[in-house]
Amino acid sequence: MNNRTLAVKLLGWICGILFSAIGVVNIFWGNDALFGVFLLLLSLVHYPPLHALFRKPTGYRVHSVVQVALGLFILWVSLGVGELFNKIDLPVQSF
Image (tube, rainbow, N blue to C red; front, side, top):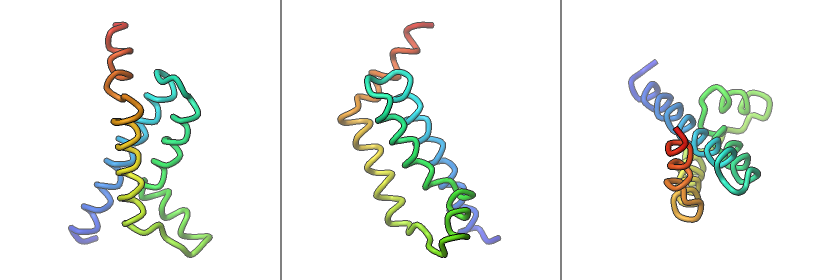
């Protein structure tokens, strides 16, 4: 495995974990749990093993442009519309 492939896989894991965490925060501390589930499902595209699992039976791969667009969409709706920072403060203040 070359350095570029390793970097792409590492970036996929980082983005997948970050976007999954955003989805979980929206599920438990947001006012719309279905929106959080939607974000969590969109984040699954970024995980390298799930990406390979999708490619195997279908023969199609999710293009990197689509992954970047989904990532930007998740960030936009969670930071702008979803008020992510206010939702993060809720569990922090309860401790």
